[in-house]
Image 1 (cartoon, rainbow over the protein chains, first blue to last red):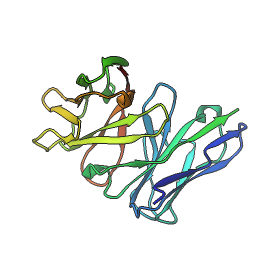
Image 2 (cartoon, chains in turn orange, yellow; image 1 turned 180 degrees about the vertical axis):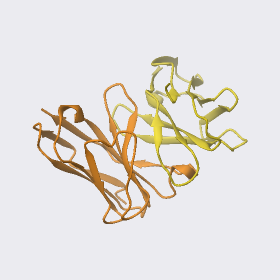
Image 3 (cartoon, each protein chain N blue to C red; image 1 turned 90 degrees about the vertical axis):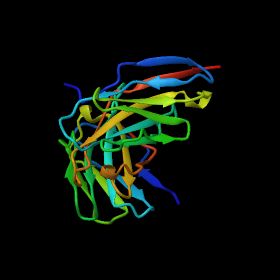
Image 4 (cartoon, helix red, strand yellow; image 1 turned 30 degrees about the horizontal axis):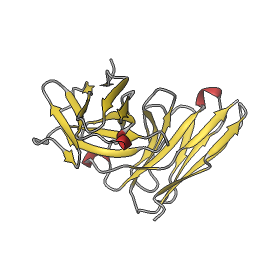
Length: 115
Length: 116
């Protein structure tokens, strides 16, 4: 099992450009999450999904969109990147979800810089 | 008000000693869950332990235990017999409310340094 993978690992964008981050998991997990981590901070939840075809907003959803067309993939899109979106982005997945206290498995992260 | 407060930005502990990392939380919900995660310098996030608000026993996972004091709204992580590999950032986090709403709030973390 590859676990949770994220593509790309690093990316530099110019202000106003768009991009999509891909998260893939091979554990048949229902729940998937996108977080961002800024220097000196804990993770902040951007969006999450409780199953294929569903998405929901987290703590900091503005400027991001997500899609979960296939159970194994969760895409995070930036339509018009801003310097404030410079961050490390983590994807995670879970079988039973946080309400059950189930383990979250994290990807290695994507370091995004917006100039 | 902050939902999760970790008051120790950094700690230095001698190897083999026990460590307590503090976490206090703020919620008006009856149903909630508390999590601890470890982030080594390599950057990955590792789930350590979970405590549900209705769990009567303190959670334990190997050398990790969660000292849950509901009335004081604290959920401290205890690491027994610390090892050099325990050096990392540690984050406390909380999920509020019943149902499938899976939002989670993280604290700012505590950086733990284990000294040889």
